[in-house]
Length: 104
Image 1 (tube, rainbow, N blue to C red):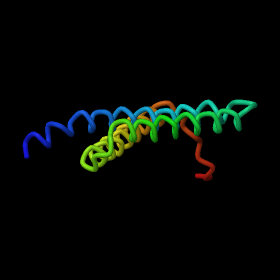
Image 2 (image 1 turned 30 degrees about the horizontal axis):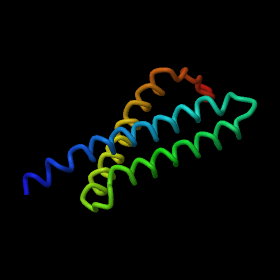
Image 3 (image 1 turned 45 degrees about the vertical axis):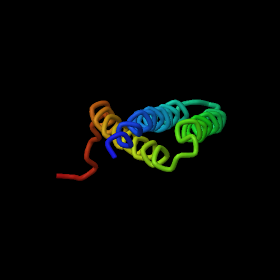
């Protein structure tokens, strides 16, 4: 039992890396794409790269073992939560204050 848990730790770490790369890349693409004159190329290229990384990473890490696949998925979702937390604090810190349109 303990050997199974230890054997899945690298899959968990790989899933974390894949999740951070996938969702960090999505966040970066949105920030670059909304200011670009060729935003469709940014979004399409990023989508293909991120999907390729995620599917290839899951396939390589799992090696046909369901436990490794689940561990990789848990790491992936943890990476998502981490990126949400990091980008939310970054976005809130860099967002300019909007003036209220309410009359006093």
